[in-house]
Length: 184
Image (cartoon, rainbow, N blue to C red):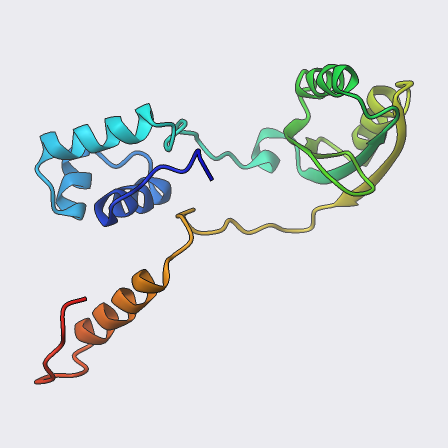
């Protein structure tokens, strides 16, 4: 994976804190990760420059914005060729109902997350903006009843990281008092 950036444990902690609350001030962030504010600011700048941090976003409640009905639209296009893919994605991204678009492998070519005002608006979106297009062969719609947000995205842990974390957790919990530990 050539694009992966090497991250220190402090970098990972910075990412964890900022993903939980991107509004954390540099002073608060520096205190949370145990760095001087100037060093912390440099670390965050490096994470931005290397493309690890790609932006800061406000999460909004679609229902409170008048779009209470969310759905996933699985779309199959034919022919599935690069010029058509790029044109189709641009069409989707121009629609105000679109929250996200994913290009997939498998029987469906795209997954579009949408938020609409009603079932009638969802039907209009599917019929007028998707199935009316020549390249759209099929649309399968799944309604969203509820969703949950995952925790901070961090790189996969290495076996050494797991061992260190378990050891640190054991130590913090008061376990192993008086037991001598080797440094790894």
